[in-house]
Length: 189
Image (cartoon, rainbow, N blue to C red; front, side):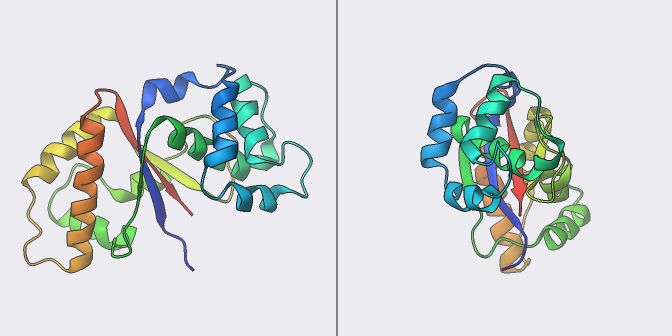
C-alpha cells in the first residue's frame, strides 16, 4: 500500500487551536477509545518511553505540556485524533486521484487551491515534525474561495479520477461552508 491523502476533516479552526492547554480529559479518552487506527498507532510507539500511546500524546497536548522532539509522528496522529473528535471526517474514495494528478487539473483550470497544500502545508497545531503523518489545511477564507470555484468548474471530458476528486472536494467544501470558522485539514500517510 502506498502513501496518499487518507482523510480530510472539516474542523472549526478556532476551536482546534484553543485545545492545547484546555485540559479536556474526556476528549483524550474519546480519542483513545474510538479513533480508528488507535491500536496500530499504540503498537507503533509501544517500545518508546512515554508518551507512547495516542491517549498519552493527546493528553499531553491538551494539558499544554512540553512535547518531545523525537515523537513528532505520534503527536501528528494525536492532532489527527483531535480533528476527528471535533470535526467531520471524510475518508477518500478509492477512485480519488493522486495529489499530483488532481493538482495538474486544478492548475489547468485556474483553481485558487491545491491539494498539495491540504496534505503538506503543515500541522494545524504546533507539534514537533515527524515522518508521518503529514498534514495541511485550507483556511476558512480559502474554503470560501474554493467553494465558489468548485461550484462553477466543469469536469465534463475529464477522467473518472478527476471527476471523483471534484465530487469529493465539493462534499468537503459544502460541509465546511455550513460552519463559518471551519477549515479543511488533510492528513497524508
